Length: 108
Length: 108
Image (cartoon, rainbow over all chains, first blue to last red):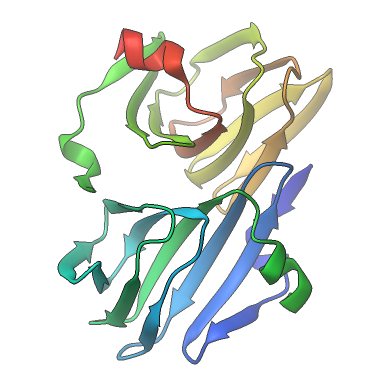
């Protein structure tokens, strides 16, 4: 199955976080465009998550520890770890979730 | 765990395919730089793979079907599917494998 990412319908995870998602048998990959200043409220999920910043700058707090992610940086968020974030600039990122985010399939 | 991708040691998967890898509990993410004309010989593995081209152009053949992937395109390669490829231009891609590529941990 082949995808043109820009043609995948967008859904807004939270205000300012617009995602295009690919769901496979085993993972969900979310390509996310974020507006400057957008806030990701603290939350957690049983899915492991790897966030890679492709462009821009994102501050993410994982279990109370802040991380500043620039383009070309990744962070691994373990299963159930609490995390929140703030877009220091507009940024683009890719999130890999394992297992599949069935909850996002429903919303998307 | 946080990574600066450019600081991850490189290992050459096959000639012309240089990878930097993150192994988590559940997935392996490979950031791959490929030289123009490089050939990926046909192979398969039980890991599901999602390849996303970030820059450049890659021709990949999955179970006999050719796909031309430009920047901003992804392809899902199911578990055990035979695939091969050719770098039409130099390109950069990101491969998500599930489960973890234990074989690459050993080589890397």
